[in-house]
Image (cartoon, rainbow, N blue to C red; front, side):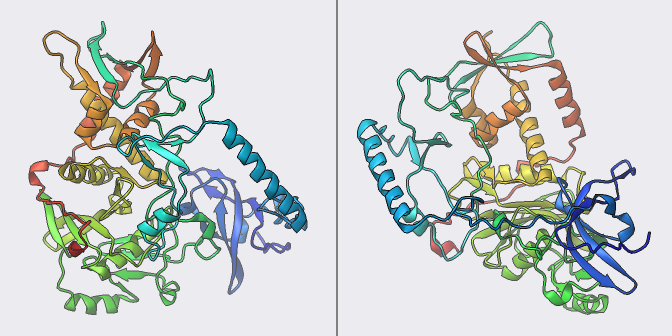
Length: 515
């Protein structure tokens, strides 16, 4: 196809030819993010609408369908107010009048409506409504001082402060202290779990997270995205015996982004611009495993604990590599507040990195994972679940329940849902009756055994569609299909963490001397 006669600019949308998973042609709508001239033709960097950013790519003009070209819409000239197009700017007099009316209205409401009393500190704590992007200079203490009490957290669930209304009662769906009763149906392979209803509550979502929390130390603030960070800047990475095609932008030095291949030392993760530089570096690099303490080894699998303060250079290089495959997290050069747990596979040449997860030394949100990644050559082989299982094994040793930072990536969410489902079903299926009575278990007990946070336990039960309301009780029904599916999944899961091989002593990071 000849060069397009119509000038295509950034922001245009049009169908672009690509191959789907079945290797069939399809024409999804795509947005032009960038245009570059190379000798003889133009190339267009496109983002497929409603597709993951890792599928973004440079395409040639013959893959564009110019018949359905959509030019970028011009911004409305109407002045905007509070980000709402079409609303006219208000005069100072109108603003003063509006503020006066709102103050008087608030006074009337306060006088007429009783404010519910706050629970004791043992029952509730102030919800964390932190900004999505973390500023290392903005301390937790200062953040708490500047926050207003906008919600309460009861049993780990954020609840809005709503005044009580007469005649309004809602049932509490699956409280955390409900007793779980398990007994066998006629079918020997299916069981039903009974959950007695909790007390009436003002909030129908009590105990159930309505949406993933967006607070977290490594959550990326999407509002700061620009055209540079939306585009992949590294073509290829050579790491040991693997060549990786990055999925997302990573802030490697600008001079390295024009190279056809970026070379990394697989042991210290230092980046180099040529194979010759890498070979020269390997004669000087004494590392054959990640720096830090080896806290787990079974067979060829090892885990190393790396302090982000003591091994800053390695931690920063690890973050740069990870950012190539993580879009929902932002990168920090201040690695001091974090611990990194690197999983490796051993052979005669050394310990080769498979994946890693990081966690805060002190987390106010009970996060046991900040970032988690299995490198692409090792994906779909069970290593992701092994990383997740190891993070919860550490939480068990610490005597805490934990949860990963939100939002999770699409692949991360799939891995966590699968792990939570298998872990909870394994416990429910192994319950045995005592003295002829049906076994009982609370949500709290499931959480304590697995170290999975109660909200994640409840959301997993909902995701599996196991919760039903029957004769005044909340019940969980484990059908034959669920049991058989669980058994098939566990049969395929060969890699498991052996707690006997873990040599880990948790530290009290609240004492600054430990840092």
